[in-house]
Picture (cartoon, rainbow, N blue to C red):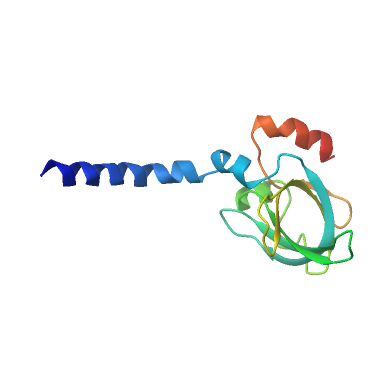
Length: 142
C-alpha cells in the first residue's frame, strides 16, 4: 500500500522540478558552444513571440552554400526594451548577429544571439546572459 503512494509522490516532485531544470543555464553548456561567432545574412522570417524572439536568416558559408540560421533572443519584453519591435526588420534585410552557435548538427544552424546589428548600423542587445559568459561576449560582440 505504501509503494504506490511513494511512487506517486516521487513522480509529483520530479514533475515540479522539471521547469527549473528546463530553463536555461543547465542546458546552455550542453547545447551551445562557448566561443562566440559573428554571422551576416538576409532576414527570412521574424517571430516576435515568447519565450524567445526568433529571427531566421540565410547566409553563405565558405563553400558558397546557403545556410539557414535561427537566431534565438530573449523574450519579447527584453528585446522591446532595447529598441526591437515588428518594424525593426523586414524580409530581405541584411543583419549581423553575434553570439554562441549551437552544437547540434541540424538542418538549420542555431545561434544564441547576444547582439544584432540592424540596417542602419544600430546594435541591439538581443539576449541576457549570466556573468560567466559576458566577458567573452563583450570582447567579441562589439
